[in-house]
Length: 246
Ligand code: B12
Image (tube, rainbow, N blue to C red):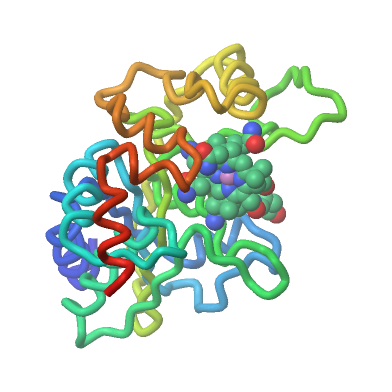
């Protein structure tokens, strides 16, 4: 790997890994190559980017401490605030570099997502993106079937949170590692897409492979609750109101 990439990767990992994030480098050209131009990132092919995932540990290592330490903005989602807090710290720590941060929930004026998180995770080798076209005997007829990424250690128990893009860093020799195709058989792929599309609320698609770690009961309860109820569950409603008054 190029020295500059290794250096930046080490700096970014140093800031994020102990908080329950994973970081995977890729080149914009790998991403643009599999997408039609409406979805292209408008940077040259050799531009360096990183995709940032949250893994199960993020909830205890980053999110709960964040809630205790930071005043919350009432209108923004607390997990999103936590993530943008930590990625802003990464940007500050790399003050000598221009860094563009893109979040998974950001939409463009044409109402398309700013970046396709699953495609980025796949081309970066972080998590295989299983799509309808990966199945030969398609049982779904006219139905719209959304694809889903599966991580080799965490199955579906993770989220793709952001891209960090370095507009002034061009890398020619970054090696592309293919994602691990961990959902091997046709039957399992069908089962996965079925569960993700028609039963995603029961979490079972996330266990399509054996996982190293998954969300705790507390984390599941938090994410399953309607947004207005979530902080109450962590016993933090009072804290939010107190902060919101200041
Ligand atoms: C809009 C959106 C939705 C919409 C529409 C879904 C959709 N896929 O279009 C709705 C509201 C339905 C939805 C629902 C859910 N979503 Co959603 N959603 C998104 C969002 C914001 C954008 C997705 C999008 O618009 N894609 C556009 C379409 C056209 O892209 P596409 O289908 O991938 O097609 C492209 C590829 O096929 C590519 N392509 C072509 N050939 C090839 C070849 C290769 C090799 C590759 C890699 C790509 C590629 O080209 C196509 C474009 O032309 C993403 C976050 C993001 N920024 O990406 C989350 C995201 C996809 N959702 C996610 C989740 C978890 C969910 C839910 C379970 C709810 C939840 N949050 O818990 C449900 C499950 C689906 C269901 N059963 O309803 C996760 C998926 C994580 C994962 N493991 O894959 C994401 C990534 C959010 C995240 N932060 O992690 N979602």
